[in-house]
Figure 1 (cartoon, one colour):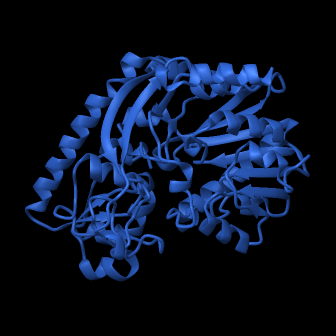
Figure 2: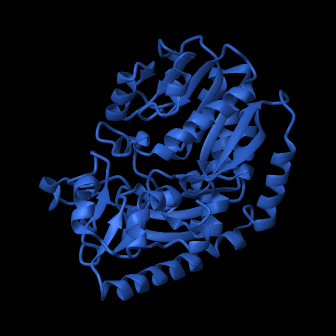
Length: 412
């Protein structure tokens, strides 16, 4: 029965079912920042095409690099560098506690990074699974119970997980990174208690389409989910979505609450969100393919801004995000157009952006020294937080430019 189920899933999941939305061309790794000594070495690239699977209502990449190439001992993204994200994950933990409605519960987090979410469950029975060795070590040093591994069916025989079920299995900004969705859902379902909840929070297709935030597409984001797609995928594993909640993180995310089939009633909020998804066409290829023309216009507008402001002032970048790699390479913005990018992450400072080779400099020591007048805001999803931080500089004439329309920035 399980083999038949897997074959059925693979049949619908096949890349033969994809219809192309947009081809971004050859792209490097989003977090593939280059050290100075490797600056002249040949860089890895992959063909980044985005397509739509009508059987699963799923938007996904045609191709993706191997997980070991993306998540390893040198992984550059650290969740805890943002004070906003610390607050977000604290609130996330409170929401999950309310959903489980149980005093003593156990938690398994998939892709726990440096422990920013899991730390809120430190007093509970907990386990974090993290494949990137450097961030696994950071979580371990916080006294958290974590294992350094990829989340797949091999974990079912791991000594920390064997014969164990969890009341809560959760994660954020990780499920879209896992190529084998069958193994991920199968393993999660096996480890989930009969009355447990499975919580998935990921960048949301609805926001990406609405805002033309094409920078959500990069090597790690293999899938861009919607409620409709999560529902379809979950049904293969006797799981179902019983609630969903929109989040403003990462430029617009959706949190999906799943349970074993027929264990919980579907919320009115979920029903309303599904009606909205169908209305805007998240299950309609003809509407989704219009995304390409909007991306082309966004690129043209961005290059015009750089041309306009570059005549007067040197242009800098603000935050060397994974998303910035897509913007820089899709728009062909290199070190002749941007002098450097300011960042606070020690894993990125002193390195260069992939392919475009823009130097990444320490925000704390260089920002006031360089006194930039024009900055391209790559971390646009932290717009409000950053504007508060730069209030004085913005009053003194500094200006942010961005590929995202201002009307969407004001909401963050």
